[in-house]
Image (cartoon, rainbow, N blue to C red):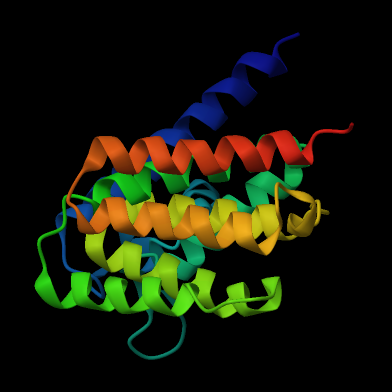
Length: 231
């Protein structure tokens, strides 16, 4: 009975040490030496084991690099986008969702992305989108839409420039693509349905009309969701 409070105190100490180190890392430039193991433990007034446990948490977050040998020590760093994507994707894999939930998530994120892109005034990006829309008009098979969708998505990211939103969208799309999905050919009139829907969305974006863009994106998303439901 006496050991539980001790374990809680130990856990809280690790958490406090982790937060203290995290704040130090954010307060300095990436690559800054925070200190060597024993030096840092003395400075923070914690034991070696506590500091090492805190360091492992921060290493996992991509905020700390432990270097050994001459010039070694604890260095603050920053996680890159790929590390954040991997962490979020791992979380989603450990908490599996149905394809329907993933489809709902991707639909919502795409709608918000397209709507935000309708506010873009960059002439060069808008010109590229117009060319992309014209290319889509000639597609006759769903296979042709594969490269188109990737290019369309990347262009929307450039038009919006919202890093967190982009990361969430990328991870969710990646997760959804790994799940079994219905064949788009069964939706509406197949290729004609997909081509017309994408061209309406692009036209609304080029018209700088967020409300119309949201309507068109929701319209196509709704048809996809309805087409994915069992008959």
